[in-house]
Length: 451
Image (tube, rainbow, N blue to C red; front, side):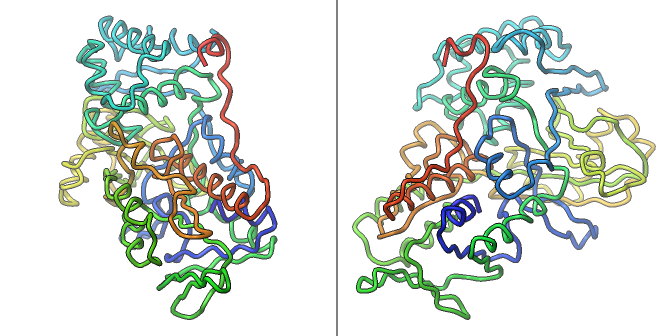
């Protein structure tokens, strides 16, 4: 979508082809027949550092549909709360007062985190071949820091076990969330179902002379050397194109490569693609007959459920009498293996440890969503398996997707960034000079000395 909208604006006649009946892929919403509610396939949040995602939202006119907050409420079983957030101190010290005053971390935990943050600040966490787990052991992190920060906040942000995360990606998350500036670390959540965020895509493309084809599968793609064009065959049509952008998940790209025209570089691309693996995210959607909490969202400590999003409050258009909560379990293959009833029962029981109102409330309906292929992993050395937009070994063909070489982990920002990079590469190949990539936020305060 980001590639298509950018290229349409640049004067190309764009056809966006989507095999599903709606846009958004893994970051979309749909009417769940079991509960008769429109739900997101998984909660997708954003931070202020997502400049390309926000640029895409502005382009299609939905930037005002994001609810922003600067605070993270951490809750322990039993209900005790701690709040992380900004102060008036300059970056990177702006989050320090609340971190030092929080109840969730012991003195040993706070000292451990301070040591680790200092090492990251000084650039001592940039080895692309070291895992986060090994790095944390070298920096003598306490058990509380490991369990309540690194395994929860960071591992869930990157949706992998700490032993399978490259420390350089963890360092990027720490800098963006907690160091560069309060603006970079601001936390955003959609106030509408995810697919509604893309309502402006089709009219935007249409205004610029293009079209969107839903429920359309490309059955073959051939390169006509004589015409210097691609021919894309669908069930109902033959589409001629001067250039194509392949914006597919990595496993779909792996299946596609053998079906593309023969090319010397195809085998190398396939070797890169097959190195990627997926990690699951599970979400439990719960509707209660009464209000459970007045919080919009919270980080839940020491249990299988990790994040709570109060969708009834975040999405006021629903006009609920009770509560609609979404609970997220990141990077947990064991939870993903549970049967539906087991997973929902466990989630409700754990939720009651944080919010006592659950015990007297009536659960009216529930849904369990298992996004088995939610994100790709970012283990040490993964950058060698991330091709650039120009690395497609076929003429006038460009790659996009969150897994290509964007410098970012598996996020909506990486997806939007990849689309802008692919659009720039296509323009350059067509003899045009065009910039779509949004600049990163500049560090503020004292962080300017460490950038």
